[in-house]
Length: 337
Image 1: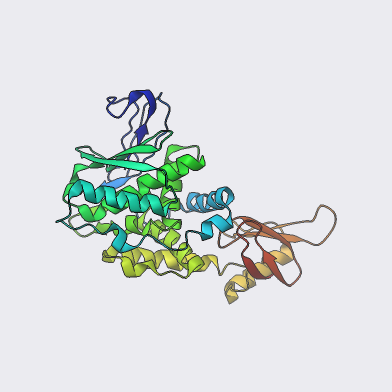
Image 2: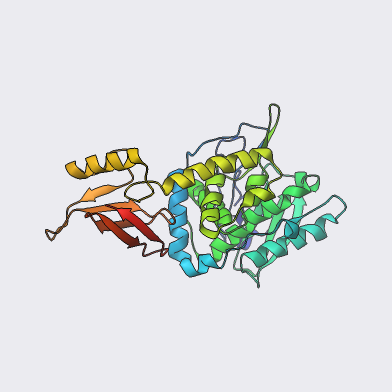
């Protein structure tokens, strides 16, 4: 999905202000300056190779932290209910344009944007979608003509574009283009609409389809973090077997976050390594998520580690069992320091 600038160039302002997006798993270049809006885009692999694994994991975690910093825990909690499959259902007998507008309204409502109005159209283009980010309240979204016959994925395309509008209004963005797209995918998934993007992923021996810059496993990871927070199971909504497999892999990594020392959920091997590092107190091993630092006032040694919920770093004194509360997401963590 791709975006373009609003402002003086308008919706039909030619090539200036547009950018191609990631196709076939590789980031495309982009160009364009001017205008009063900002870009919003995401990648799409349609028939090309799909990247797998967790290559963007650090940025994904930074995006979760940034979301909590911008919204607060209380606001994140208002998104405890995901977009319902029935709200974005689209069958072949539905009117294309009326159906797209209906789905857009549901996703706008989910993102708490009551005054925003999406005008959805279709045209032939190489990427999945455009959104024109202006001051609003109307936002023009164009979807690739392929969605005329792949209507079940219209909700996924619109979820990403509405998330761009949401972040645009929040003023939340990362500096680099690719990182900003990872932020958008992460926010879409963490706030309850991104399961649609993962469900749009399909791959077999002869064809593939994926929307977004995150890999399928990274989408699974963010959805798993959300599931652990809210007690939700998005896997029951998946129609794609490949999406389910990616979610399972993402859940395994999300649970591993909760088993890192000094958390009491760490396994025997992790606790043993932690005890060794604590005795030597030479900082962190390259693969460790924790780091030891001396107290500048001469107090006890301190250890810092990421909160498994929001990834904000927490610092506590070393000295046995302790209960720590994350100052950002307010998670209460049982630790053995």
